[in-house]
Image (cartoon, rainbow over all chains, first blue to last red):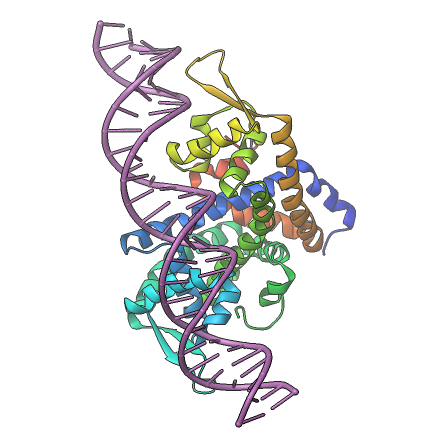
Length: 164
Length: 164
DNA sequence: CATATATGTCAATAAGGCTGACTTATTTTT
DNA sequence: AAAAATAAGTCAGCCTTATTGACATATATG
């Protein structure tokens, strides 16, 4: 982008690549650690978190679209989702337009849990962003977007919606 | 860092935070997707990958230090590690200095698998780094390091070794 | 000698993925 | 109207990866 190609070569050494792999490993490990602990006390796991998060982000989302985001099987989602529905975290309604579809929305209880979890992860992000500075944040987003498969990259590079 | 504090405020909105959460989710999902598929054909899982990776990075590492990196229990590591040892991917020797310790090193077979896996993830990183540019790469590393818990952040911010 | 450390192991449990097969309801296509 | 495709749900069984707790062994250190 702002640098000639040759400037990138030192960034592409084996050592440089391994540093990136490790940054991603440790960052993701710590990024998920806190919410995992919170979830455990509610009897949930990371899978529940992901469902709650993406339903919050995409109210009225259908099961199929959720499957596309999570990239897990219908059966895997089913166990988690039906638990969240039966325990009153997610509301499920038949779509008006296409009555085969069930639209998912968070209940007040679901909103509360989502807020707690996102607040926790958000605090980590805010702290990191403040410490790193705005320039670094731009770079962070640019590189992460490039790491994502092309199918989903548009959620972040385009002007479109971030999810679904 | 390079920007006054007020410049950071727009980066700390709820929307901005959620974008970061999603970037991390999608990037990690795709980052682990390819090696997971490779591993499955060898009958291994992501846990084996992590062990092989960090043994490659830290030849002669002890079990305890590996546990510290992975942050899993001894019993969880044991199953994966003993499998890798018995199938000839990792060599285990009694430490000369402290004979309670077992030092771990990759065999040629282990090196080969590690190379295949890291090559795969490395290609993704190299492509992303080239597409994003050197400035973005700096920002990427800065923010990720800040996301990591303080205990392990020194692996990346200091001049010291990246691991252990 | 006593204690602490490093490692290994047995047993039981759980979350969260997977495949395959099949049903039901509804919409779309022919 | 019949056929095919889509959306969702369900049953049964399997695997990996993690957990806890208890205990064994070898070695090092006080």
